[in-house]
Image 1 (spheres, rainbow, N blue to C red):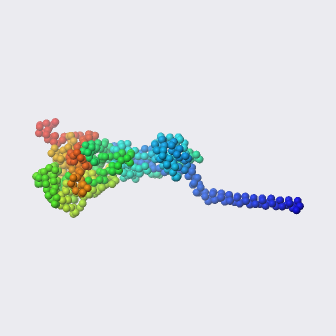
Image 2 (cartoon, rainbow, N blue to C red; image 1 turned 90 degrees about the vertical axis):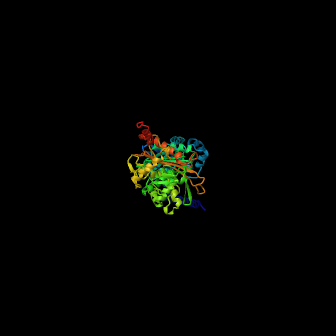
Length: 583
């Protein structure tokens, strides 16, 4: 082989290498081009979305929840601004060290924070209700991977005041109990979406908010008067503690409008930390829990008798304290012989009530009780209302007819009982109870109003006036409700001492419910009040346990409302007899 051939072979080899390399590069260019096409054209949408998630985040938060005011526009529930702190565990290096540094700022245990930051999740909540100081401290640490989301939390500035009425809401801003739950659709604001844009170091350099219509929740104005509410709660607490009772409740109502001025419970709870209290203290038992009202039902037995035409002048033989009917024996607390219709109510004779009920028959008694709303819901704007229990008269036995006349074998809620008594004070017209006066926008414009709503006439004006006299006699010095009368005011009322059915289904060796219900003054009535004390230990009679709390609520409420005192009728009669009419 000569040099020429050798050179040609070298050139051919070089050309082959160039060709191979060229082919390789061509293939690579094709692969890269195809990949670029695939990435930029085919995967463009998904990759753009993935990239956006790294630097751009959309966060939803609810608007401000509406404020709840009392009748005088005092704040009962407000929404305070907070910062919710979240974290992206996958972006956080050394979670154990970070947890150690930040736990003290957030009032979270280091162990709990480390566990959250170490989770295999894209996002976790660190603190839902952080204060601005806590959020600022965390921001100042300049640690990447944390989110700061503005929001609101519910604050109950009066703590336990009207807790069962107001209820509470959860961390997600939804109402869970009470008015917070019942009016959640009005109180709850709509969503606001926050779009946050960050740089490569996780620092926010742009954010914008986009709100839906009605972002701010609507406000509620209640019929509740916070001062009367406080008076009722203090009087109730005193009565429960002094009588070593299990619990108690009190309701204050304006008879001619149906407006509820107070609903008090004891024991109560603080909605700011509701989780620290037993669940059975959360519910509004004046609405949800039925009880046997005892002798307070004699008001409505008397109404049925009067409406049937029975004369209030009739005399009843009360059998000296023991009477057998329907195979059972009925007893009176004190033995009586002959009592007038008025005295049956005044001295609260069970035997007298049973005999009057016999005269009018079960249908008349049942129809009257139904007319007063027993056995059906009142329609009050509160959640969980009970209808109580009033069985149809066709299913009554003889003993049932007798015992229902004095409040056994029938159950009612507190709101049913006070609504029925208020009808007597309101000349026989029943009003629907209500607790929300108006719903308003944040700017004060009225969305909806709840005015007085009549449920119709249940008894005649004449019957109502006679019932007032009967109830007034029950609060005389000889009556069972004498301790309910405030100084210089008149009271029409009725005591109730109801036996509670024991675990064996009988009334033997049982606990009691002490009741007093009434209204004041007798003429131009301003308010009706019901006090119920459950399982008192010191005394168990309604006149000794519940009546003093009634007196305190009325006396202090009238002082607050500046209602001019009326001369007590008994004091007036004494003054006349002694020649000191002007004293």
